[in-house]
Amino acid sequence: MNCSLIISTYNWPQALRLCLQSVANQRQLPGEVVIADDGSEKDTENLIKKFQQKFPVEIKHIWHPDEGFLLAAIRNKAIAASSFEYIIQIDGDLILHPYFVADHLAMKKEGHFVAGSRVMLSQKTTANLIQHHSIDVKKYGMPRLDTNTIRSSFLRNILALRYKSKGKYRFYVKGCNMAFFKKDLLKVNGYNEAFTGWGSEDREIAIRLINGGLKKQFLKNSGICYHLYHPSSSKEKEIKNEELMRLAIETKSTWANDGLNKYLHSYLHS
Image (cartoon, rainbow, N blue to C red; front, side, top):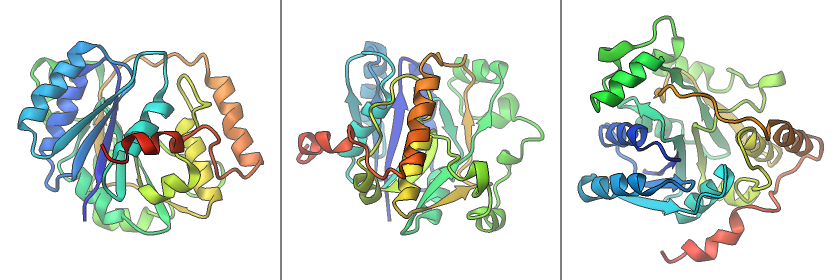
């Protein structure tokens, strides 16, 4: 049982280095890594090439020119390029707990997709980790009193279908920590590329997956990952994106008109 690990990135190779170090440190490695690069400059490409030479699994680098914040599009291209039936999706500013992939695969279940949490690191801790090329979060400043740092298979199993599953949290997800069967992403045509700029593209795909009959499992107290500090992204498109999300709820949408299918032929035999 294995998976494709998709990592989105944009012009932060220092963080991507730590992310890839943490992937190589997994107790259960993914079958491949697919880097979804939203137009980074040459230093990111150079870093990826260095890792490709020594990494324990194949790293694919999927890149398109920098034409603004096009996360939905680059994730669709990475999904199309992926080789395995199951996809774990993260961002390149995360350090993964050594059991991150194993925990996700333990939750793999037909008819479901997975949404996870993240532990927010301070600016000081982030700076120290980057300076020392270290993924040892405990050494440089594990957050206190954050229940997301607690790994427990007992709690994971109890909370999977109960935590943030109803009411205003029904569609709650964080795109930096999710997992799906590839066939389920194909059924909804992946991400909706009407979303440009920061915000809501992750919740909108969750809405369409749930409208299509899937259930959300929340990966609580497992699949732990640590989010490196950075200033917030520009939210100038937030209102427009939230309107698109509400439209998916109101229309009970299950399909992205501008989505994944246009890339499938390009990556079919790559």
